Image 1 (cartoon, rainbow, N blue to C red):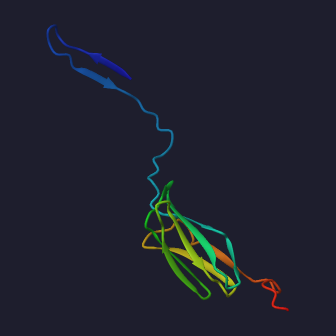
Image 2: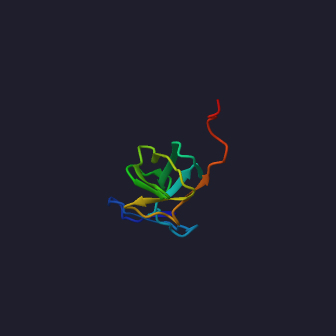
Image 3: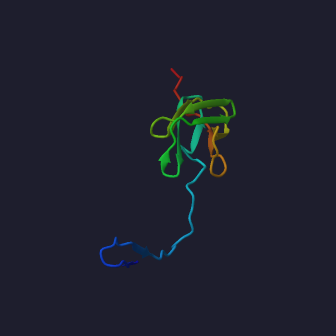
Length: 130
């Protein structure tokens, strides 16, 4: 950067400056889509209650108040994200298949995440013999 001042004696000085800026990378606007992360990645079709945590982010920030919808075999549930950007759903899957998680009213980055629902293992459960 350079600066110079040219003025006659007893006059106000007018400063002129210039600078060169080197652009290191092209400008990337902030993301306008939401990223969804689902935990756990799989559930068991046992009919028992299981919690699904869905985190929603826009860039690095949590999205508060987003509506998360989970649909699958015998399941249709929705929840809103809290102050940390996480929605918690308690589900009772009883049919094997895949659960799809979507956002209502906003755009997701990429394909909707899917959660596998595995068949319950035979012979696992309470013993009913006397």
